[in-house]
Image (cartoon, rainbow, N blue to C red; front, side, top):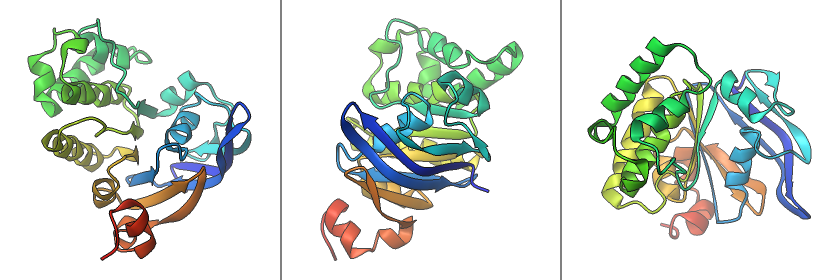
Length: 238
């Protein structure tokens, strides 16, 4: 049984059909990548799973349970968290405040304290800046904070929307190293990423979205050498 399953999902933005009848699965323990051009429907798909957008058609299942009509708050409680595109940290709040707010569904104070310590272990720069306003952090540090904040709800499924966007290459590699560590520790990851090659190199399987429809899917290593994917997303064929 898949941890997450989208069945024939279609989503509209007003009169525009942004996603058209997609089927997608994420198994427990996987890193699954969703790639495609700007406007293909990638972020829309994540927002639908987070229940921030209603479906026009289809259904979303998590751990075998239909969550199509669940609230955004309910799916967080079930174990789904998202680090959104653009990071969206609370700029005027401290790093520590942002992490505590990420645990808003929890009441286990000792567990929250332990998880903050764990996040500071994973992200040492956040520990150094724990009392600093989030808005004064660098772009890379804000991305680390956005991921750490999402992890504070103890998700089984972490969705990352464009984690490398606007970051320097060395910081991007650091972010992907953290993604690998989180997955190795047991967090399943659904990743939307503009750097298609890097994302595919760090994932088990890949789905390719074009104009709201899935056109290719399969093992990431196989798609890395697929001539059609190479031409469209990876800078040309061999």
